[in-house]
Length: 454
Length: 11
Image: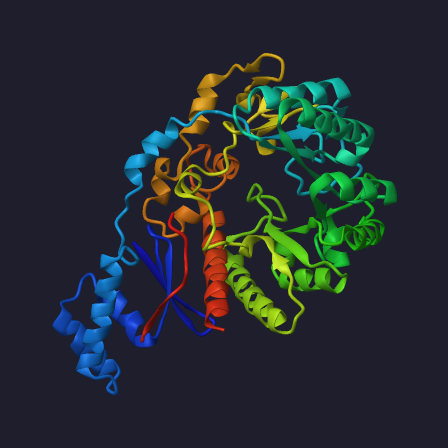
């Protein structure tokens, strides 16, 4: 399977099953498009009719080049992975990461929040140190031979339980000395309580910090409001700026959510850069289609255009020496994930679990609060093994809707939570998200082609 | 001359 497209002046051909990317001229683009279903003499005739300046020998040479690439496994490669998908289903459930819900409580009440303003359809709750400590022991006990483990402090708003976060980090550092493990800690915050003390601690201990900002003030304040309904932009932006200044070269993301009210989200990304931020993410809201902020099919043309303009703008800014990164464009063609990961996905429900303040286990943060997805607890482990097996089977080859998709080895079948919440099945396909994903991949690959051409 | 292949990893 191949995917051909034209973008930003480039003719691009992706060979799906080898991952090869080719930048071609117009003649080669048309030759490749005809190659599998057109006799050689007709390819020559059609090309010469369309491009009179191209000789027959030239066209034949181009066809030979295509044949050489095919013989070398770089073009029209067969699917050699489907037979191995069953073996991946038998993957073990050795943990690599936990999402610790240290707070089912929030000092904001963002309307579009998937977590129901931070409480996950339950009661206000903070994780105790003892529960957090046991969760980290559970991670170590179930991590097999893995050395590197990850713990994400999540909420709600984790800074509402800051003392416990600090104590758990200290406990993790102590475990490193006794268990031979290494912890990578991350934190997601709305920024309201991000003061100098938190900043200093994060810069010492947190591998990555995600800072929630939707962009322009009027966009951010539309939904990111406090319990009194007042926008939070003026409170959080100075905190984020001070944090990023102190962060130096450390990892962080300023992460926004775009909705139907800012389909011109490129303006919000530009606003983030004007505020001094350079590591950015802007992600589409995923919600019930009846919600006022929900994106719809009619928004797609403008969203596609925004993604394309963003990719071009990033190339311009790189040339000007003012680069910024965009999370969804960080595809790595030279070193990206191996085939196992490209087929099996993120590992939710098997290698990654979410822990509630009460110590319950869920497949990931997006399933927390739904009793159908309660997997067990941190004292007795995973009791719902049938559910775990269902997640084990969530490979890209388990999704009928992915069968003919050229992007399937980049998304591994997509997010199980999005699939479930939009189709009712873990192996369903959230088609709207797929459309945006494919556009992002086209833009990401175009950026790589442009960089290679320079 | 008409096709440039980027350096990509072996999956």
